[in-house]
Image 1 (cartoon, rainbow over the protein chains, first blue to last red):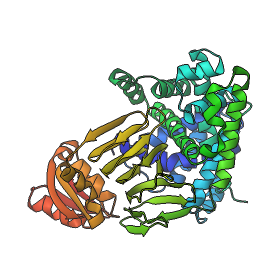
Image 2: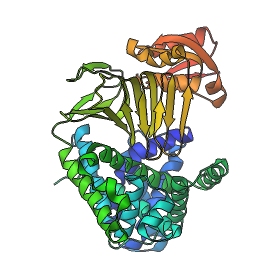
Image 3: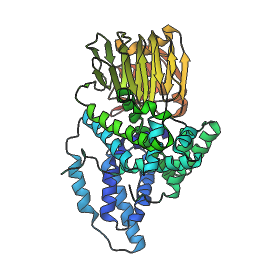
Amino acid sequence: MTASGVKAWFVREVLPLEPILMHFLRQNWRNRADLEDLRQEVYARVLEAAEHGLPDKPKPFVLVTARNLLINRVLRERIVPFDAKADLDDLEVASDAPGPDRAAIARDELRKLNAALDRLPPRAREAVVLRRIEGLSRREIAERMGVTENTVADHIRTGMNALADVLFGEPSELTRRS
Amino acid sequence: MNDLPAMSEINARATAFLERREFENWDEADERELSAWLSESKAHCAAFWRLEAAWERTHRLAALKQEHVSHAGPLRTARRLPGWSRIAAASIAIAVIVAGFYAFQPQDTVYRTPLGGRQTVTLADGSEIELNTDTVLSTRLTSTSRSAVLVQGEVYFRIRHDAKRPFVVTANGKTITDLGTVFTVRNDAGRVRVALFEGKARVDMGGKPIILSPGDKLIATASRTVVSHEQPQTLSTDLGWRRGIVIFKRTTLAEVAAEFNRYNQTKLVIADPQTARLTVGGTFPADNVELFGRMASEILGLRVTRRGTQIVISR
């Protein structure tokens, strides 16, 4: 598998699973401070496996990888085990639900983007809006916001990180099942 | 996101790269630095690709600006506002997006084609469009404006010119405005390609607009934009799909495979990099990848094996 093929697959198939992955991790791991590390570790393992061939079914693959990782941590850290199996089965059922059509996905996407922007810290949001909607340079944004270029870079970096968390990490209206 | 978690070191590094690439002149040395870091660990790849994918999605915000802000005004005057109202301007921008979003749905007509499909449509204004394989296009014609969003795939536009209502196509945050035009726009995986056949078109990507003339071909990714000029005959090979064919001229097997795979469930796979670099020429039915496989075997003397839904070509 080529690197660009793995990347395209990762972006297309794996990242959209992040709400489910995070839900799974949150359900089964008490320490919230570990979540980002765990997510990163799951993705790294998934990518390593993908180099030898893309898994047919990304969702069970990602979740089984996550479960194995948690089990290993539990064994290593000798903490109270958990029952990941039941949750995994529930998620499988959800995956059989008919998918929303593309127009609905596009609308959902815009709604998510709006929601994501709303949730950024105000200065980060302002910097992201000035970049993305007005297309200003770092210097122009700095002038507009009355701060240094370094501060603009900080705001943008915070914004980039928070956007990824909101866009990938949180369940959308359409995929959440009531 | 009131309680933003502290960024992990990997994430911090990945965002630093992404921020620099977004704002600075990104040259080969930078690209090498990034590649080296990515190749150090899969965790680095995951972190960077994830942030990049999220950031690229915000291109859609720019598309909304094109669609709605022109009636709204405040953003355009924002540059001249005194300091105290800067934040107000930013929040107006967000209000406009939200308002724009809710206005976005009802009047739109969405056209879509399946893998291998093709569809010709005459729009209400007399413009003709043709959708290539695996394409989603949303159009909106009103008495004051004409616009289309190419969500994915490729579309041929023959636009009936109307100076009062320019036709604006948005793809991945880039906008193409017709100035009396025949052109194609292709949007796949964040790469936008525009080829201009007749007339003129303006491409806006946030910076200085680019005016395209006949024979011009523009390729834009998140980080760079290239415009090349080609002879009309060369460019017309790009329109083979309208006749259901693909045309190759000194095309590498890697590109040949990518092209056939746009149209077919059966995927052409090139086994190794040396083979992928071989070049071929010829004209083939886009939906007959088997025929290409036979030619590769019989004429080029390559090894062609069928594995399930794959045709694997090696030396």
